[in-house]
Image (tube, rainbow, N blue to C red; front, side, top):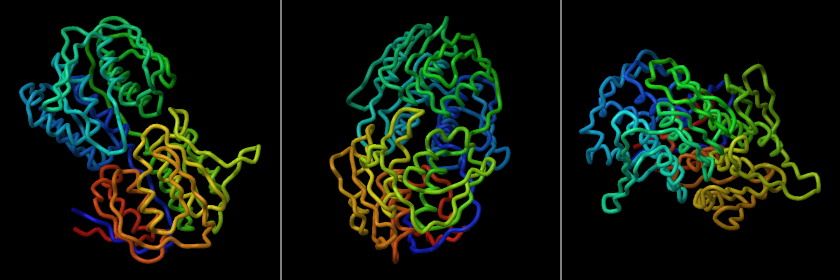
Length: 435
């Protein structure tokens, strides 16, 4: 098992470019199964989750070709049904949360799909009701095998219908969209997730021949087509990495220029970091963060303590709350971090408290951070990463700390951040990867 050894207290300086978006990549990779024609994906991040999904696609019979750095072509001429229903496929899907989005494409191509109950981060309950209910509305029949932990769906012909989602689930919306594009008739999805990455999936499908109206809103109308063709697609920069680098610059008092961020797709993220008092400039499509010794958390207009909470898009993505929490440790003032969606995602704060952070865990969903205003340095400690986002938050804390820190189980970080140690070392960090 790999670990990071971090020597804290180093300033960063220079340019850094975010990788392709992990969450978008997993969606569009599943979509390549919807056609027997070639699909080319550019700016694909080569992180652990993406590589694992590509391996699953290859085992399903998809022809995969590396075209250039970050550019890969996929051609699913024939899908290996024997493997798709095998124990090996179920075992592979168990370790990857994103594999649940293979349900719809396999249902479309084979008339049947079997996946494991989802793996991935241990951050609380992550139910699949939205996926299952949506696909059932389109005509799929669902069954669950509790003994071997599998979910199975089958159908002869999916049919368009009106669907009101019980929650704006991103992966649930993606699954239903992929099922609806070749369903007979028209499908209306209300309360759909409308994140930029869902929009990107829709745009790829449109280039493949799908008919989708309302892209970017929570009301989608999809007219089913008989067949989809090939297309070329470019993945957006990862907004979570952009936010991580903003927080990293603030915590370490560093000057950083974050390149090619697709600013128009960042939504409320820049504004949320500004509320922590962090100064930055938009320079074209870059974000320049100057070195700053102090950043002061805003209060609400009535003088009450600032609350930062996650919400469905265009609200703040829950994937950045861990980063915002750790960034607030060295701010001036106090903030309440309210993680509404997952009840286990804040439990890593005990490690931050051990490093000297003034953090109060109120309950599984809420934390109060009382900032040090850089008057007290965190102390290096040994930690273990429980999930991707807590892992990067721990790394930011360790980089700002005094002394040496060790983070174990960094495979969790590698699942979401490509070569993060090399990229940060290139701009001044001191991170050693050890086995």
